[in-house]
Length: 249
Image 1 (cartoon, rainbow, N blue to C red):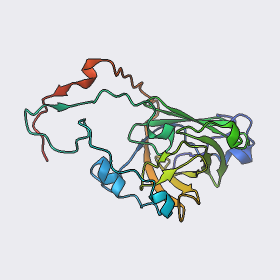
Image 2 (cartoon, rainbow, N blue to C red; image 1 turned 90 degrees about the horizontal axis):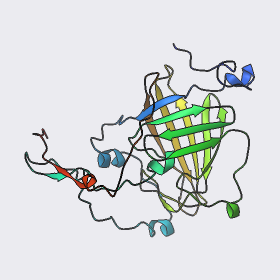
Image 3 (tube, one colour; image 1 turned 45 degrees about the vertical axis):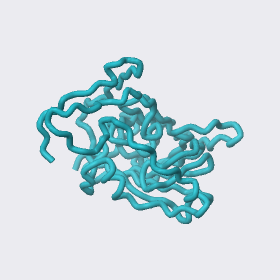
C-alpha cells in the first residue's frame, strides 16, 4: 500500500505529527469518472438521485431551454453531414467554479491554511483551512463558487460552502441560493488512486430533506499539470462545422 498521508516535514509546514496523520494526500490532478455507465452527459445526470424539493422551490424550476445547435446535439451524424463543433461561446467558469465539477480535470494544491482547486477552464476555488468563519451575508456578494471553509476529519477533507448565487445544482434537479449550504467530504480509496466526494446540499426553503450524492475521480499520474483552455468568442472559426468520419452507433 502506498503512503497516503504526507508528513509535516515534507509539505504541511506548521502541522504537528499528530495533525499530519489526519491530512490525506489530495495533491495533484483528478478526472471525474462515470462509474455507473451513463453513456452520455444526459445519461450520467439521470443516474443521480432526484432532489426532494419543497412545493415553493419546485415552482421555481424553469422550463427546459430550447436545444442549441452545438457539439452537444447528442445524436449520431451521418457520414458527410456537417455539424457545429462549437457555438462560439467561451462560457467563463463552469462546474460552479470548482463545485459540482464537470468532465474537465481539476487540480488540488494543499497548504496549512488553504486548499486551492484549479480547473482546466477559467475558474478556481479557495478553501480556507485557517479556522475562519463565513463572512456575514451582508458583506458577501454571492458567487457561483460561494465561500468555502474546511477542516480535516478522520483523514477526510470536509468543506462547508455558502453564499452561492441563485441557480441550479448540477445534478439531481436541485436548486441553490445564497443561504444554501453545501457540505463536501473528500475521501481517498485505500490505494490513493480514487477520490470520492460526497455532496450534501441543505436549505430548508428549498429541500424537504438534504440532497445527497457522490462523484468519483481518478488520480492523474505524478507530474501532470493543468492545460490552459483558451477561447475567443469573436473568432469566426469558433463557429465552424466539420465533416465527421464514419461513426459507429
